[in-house]
Image (cartoon, rainbow, N blue to C red; front, side, top):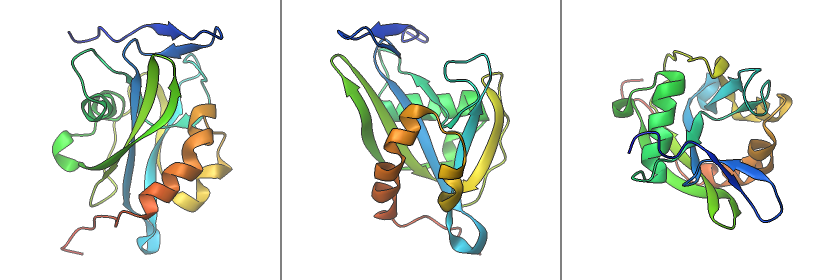
Length: 163
């Protein structure tokens, strides 16, 4: 059922995690200046959990969704991205506590796509990978960025064959 994943899961330590069935986010890559990879980041709206930080479009998984489906749906809702413009490359479980996981879905676009932010986004921005850590990052994304960058570096970036 659509939206049935919205809600908090509380761990044995008392920490709360968004997504009754886990959560997923989309690390979307595209060629940047000089061919270096750029990633699409979301500046989280001030009212949201960890508002004012930069992270990935993403959110709660619904009961019927795979992490890939949830990440692509959330990227469409939060950034206006169309599924037919994305190529999913791999998934990485970047956080796990008893009964809850956050899965980052790494995908490529052949060019930096236009975005349309929703109310959860103060801003959406394509950022060259080397510049990501210069932003105030969401703590979960900050903790996983080095690992994600290493995994992504092992996957050749898709490029537009017409360029």
